[in-house]
Length: 118
Length: 109
Image 1 (cartoon, each protein chain N blue to C red):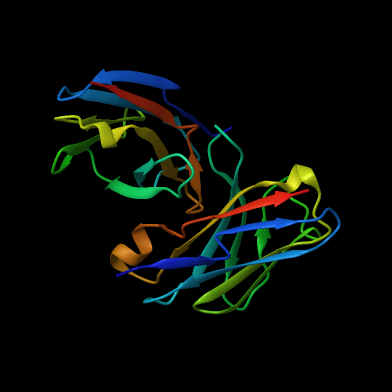
Image 2 (cartoon, rainbow over the protein chains, first blue to last red):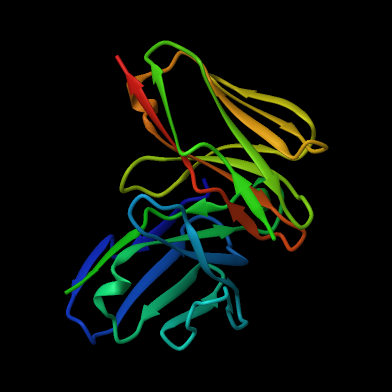
């Protein structure tokens, strides 16, 4: 159990366009979802934390107007990269935690979305 | 500030044992995690320690000393597929995960 999916797994877009990435918890209710970005050969960088039904909490240096996060249900969160530029090219990973026990103690990661902005 | 330190890279031989250390300084402590990440893939959970001591799970074991702010991940009977990055992460008082930069483990035949 505790499977998290992401869609799409990879996307190539033109500079200036917007890209939406979906993160779904398939078999549990995710009260909290996290969005990470990872550049090549670097560690995970937390971008924001979102709780279902409330506004996301962004980490310092992450532009909330550029990276729009919506967590409208207990199984779905979306990240929209608005007006994407080549420097936004990265590996975007979401993770989710549940409400209790092992589902709360562990962050379950999606497979990631590789974004390339031309 | 909050800080997680682990070696950047380690090399070991197939069949051998390797220990990857992690030291941390965080605002509060609510558990330490080890994740494995293969290149181009998302991290996968390996272990979780919240009390002092050793947690064993097959070929992998993880140790924690809260008083020393120290953990290690022990990998036994190394296999080529164990070549990956190993990420140490600590959950702080706000229940945020603070991530180390990861240790790239290279396994040689």
